[in-house]
Image 1 (spheres, rainbow, N blue to C red):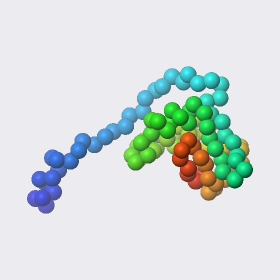
Image 2 (cartoon, rainbow, N blue to C red):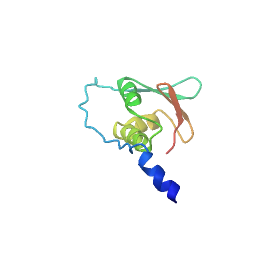
Image 3 (spheres, rainbow, N blue to C red):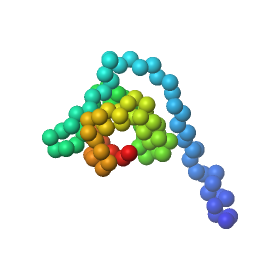
Image 4 (cartoon, rainbow, N blue to C red):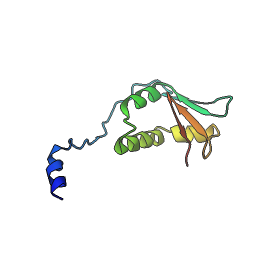
Length: 101
């Protein structure tokens, strides 16, 4: 227990990610969803680039922000409308993930 007490002050500060309100300056369609010939779904456009640049996928809070933003911007609904279903591969910039309902 003594070793833990000695180590605690040397640990790095806990990072807290706070959401920022950002005024959208995108055109009418900030993203597009396409179904590729190989059956994957691709999301592209200015929203994709900005979101990938702002998310630290190693941090849970940042990952939660990513998921909330996809839902809030209608990306999840657009994927469903394009035919994406449970387990389908979604390409988002240089990342791939499975579509989960």
